[in-house]
Image (cartoon, rainbow, N blue to C red; front, top):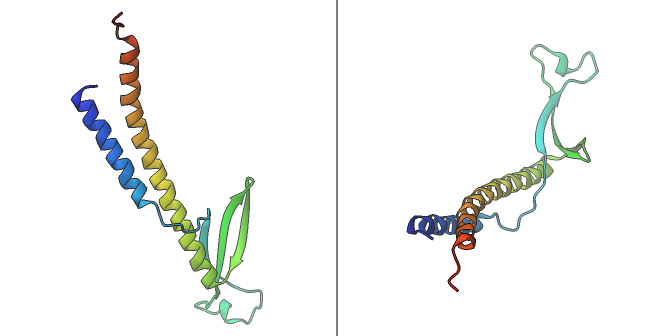
Amino acid sequence: MRAAERRRLQECERRLHQLGAELPPSGFIRPGSVTCRYAACGKPNCHCHADPPQLHGPYWQWTTKVGGRTVCRNLTESQALLYKEWIANRRRLLEILRQLEDISEEAAEILLQHAKQNDQAPSAT
């Protein structure tokens, strides 16, 4: 293996260990998103129909996909804060995983090329 390849491989290993240290602490993870909604009701004389309207809310909602179907759950504000934290943990984890895959691909190219060269080298018998 050439010195330049060895340095690239060492840099990949350094970045791999650095990303491993950035993994979020053992926090919970959840997919989906949290939204805050305000709405008007059906009562014609309610303040939500005034000018300007004073809508009802906030109403917090978590939305995700389960088995290809959209699932929604109404939340309290404190539940919404928990879900936001869990969703953020998941997004950080997925981003770190993506970077780990990129680093692994780069290292694999170096290692596979080196293995191929070793296989093609004439044996000294």
